[in-house]
Image (cartoon, rainbow, N blue to C red; front, side, top):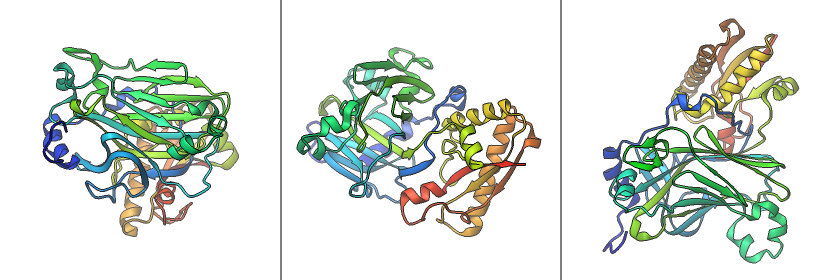
Length: 377
């Protein structure tokens, strides 16, 4: 903080600030037409559950500035706090990302001592805050003489501003969903003092960016491959005392059409269906995957599906079995509410009994926490 005699922890600041602000989530109805489909195979996931406040994140490399774990609303999150903070997921040596990828995360901008709206109105936010995502690590940019050729179009960063503008190469888009903030007409209510869900789909041909339920950008890709995802936050300058926070980071491979996947494999791994931690409460962004399943079942009236719930190995067996059944039931009930005949759907929880990856790594556990839709005769 400017002219501060000592550094107050991000967690203490968040504890003082956020109970008064009351950080909210975007309502489910806003996702009614969401069409993002995440990849099926999780390559990296971090929800920061096992982290401690004010520490360096375990599964990230901090490249610059102050990047630490903070606690907001009872959740551990990643704070981009001071000094051009930048960090990227830690990957194994010689790890190579595939051509088709999805990246998801939630982000929140906040001021150290007041709500974002109040800070905007009194001029103590700069209006120029953004998160950049670069597609290689700093060592590549500084020391790899061939990096521009290797990255191709991904040599350009993806920029997401606090006001909802998104840019990549020469392509730009602007968030335009929802209502403006009364008295602060430059701001959207869904982006101010709320967690914003960012979804990015990368293929050989395009890069698509969604903020909450709106597709904001669809940029063509001509060449190149992603080498990593480097997050860098810019808050204007320290005098504005603005900071960015990130949670629920997931990188996955794929993003296939669900009916093609069902036809080829007899099941769909529905990565887009997500729940609050340890609960069977569906997250609003799950409507993207749920809508695609509903559309598929309406187009193919012969389909009957079992909704199966699966967990990782954390916790005891009985609790995991109960949770997986509750989640499977919640998905079935939601599909019925969206217009699917109950006779076409069954639900079953399998707990931790059918892992598809080792439970020894965060990515492996993330792969095992899943909802599957099995084709039934």
